[in-house]
Length: 94
Image 1 (cartoon, helix red, strand yellow):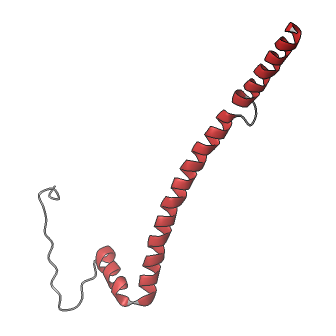
Image 2 (cartoon, one colour; image 1 turned 90 degrees about the horizontal axis):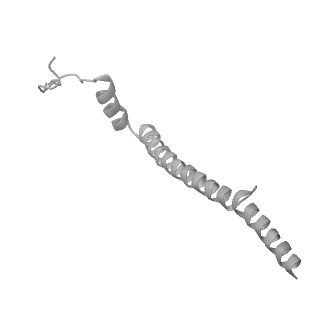
């Protein structure tokens, strides 16, 4: 009877060891869950970025207003008969 109990305890210990520390263990499962959460967050950020880029492309395809705005901001476009003013703050003066 004692031998059977000892054998069952050893078997239980071996199974517990494999469950918590072995290959495909609970710890490994939790690590994969954490990785999955991080990847899902990255995918959500990339999806938001893609949505913004898609909106920019649509704006550029639809009208000239977006193109003009981008030219003004990025290339310094000034139309004919417009006056350009630049306000310099003390932080910009060197």
